[in-house]
Image (cartoon, rainbow, N blue to C red; front, side):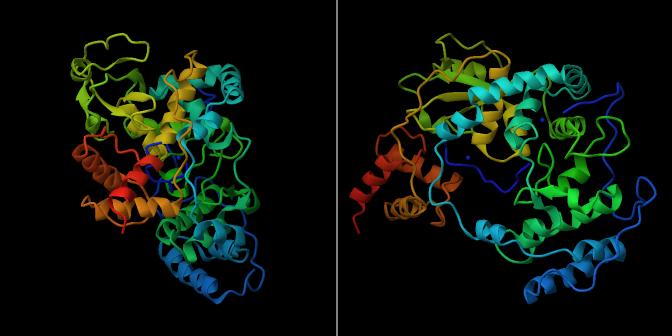
Length: 428
């Protein structure tokens, strides 16, 4: 579960072997006794694995905090003796990608024919388990398998970084320290409660781990013993991983029996300023505005609330989104990710591909161009907020105002053509 992503450019999984409801995760109460008698912890070797004074200062500072939070000295010292900063993570943490990946390129790999075939195979292999989880939580089994595929390719890519060193690398310095310090502390509680072997606790570079990529704080809230063996192992037990993901979605508001969304077609006179995930109307209202299914049929009249999402602007496909889409966003806060999960789930259930073509001739803006885009919007009198190269809600709202003032479709989609227009209007 990668929680470091932000809302992308508008265009960046699980068995239960017993019939009883999944047991709750180990409580987050910091002073609770371990679930079973603790195993002897290895005695730390003298010294540390690094001589970096700033890193060692962090290790010492965290020891004080950890012991005050209920972590034993033996637990902390057994972890700390092997800690060291990971150069590759330092590099990734410091550098932002120069280009954003277009949503269609992301979906090409996320919802590939191979991934769809593998998803259907997992649905068959774990049919009884997934049916049980769906009955217990109300979360659609295809959504769970799609998350499994998106996070780790069904367990094939769980991450190989040592969990504690990865989190410590992010926590001792850099832009993600505020995220990583609570996660490091939570990981200590997991280690103390669950008694995993330290060498088995691997993660992604950002500290997410297991087959469904939970962060440590998320594990403490939602992790579930899905196979009934008395322990929780998200690395090696698909049952635990799937049941945990389902519990997360269910407790975050998943509406059983309701869709995440589906593709629609928009009329030529559609008010594009209303196409925003924060703008909701009833399906009946969208129908009165001329919105139809992708096949051109009228929408079923309903008072259900939904929003319109244009991941590639007015020239790309449009999707009608329901509250379950935002629940998927609580697993990973990236609209392209949630879209991929929904589309992959539908494809494994027999639906066809997206019908409206993507604007594949569009090229992504570089980070410097995204900053220039924001600066030019401000010069034109439409303040997007800080010129940070992140085309978030503030930039999209400012762009919509600019487009509407110029008589353009106000889709809020920043592209090369719009940047050229802004540069022509504000040459200095």
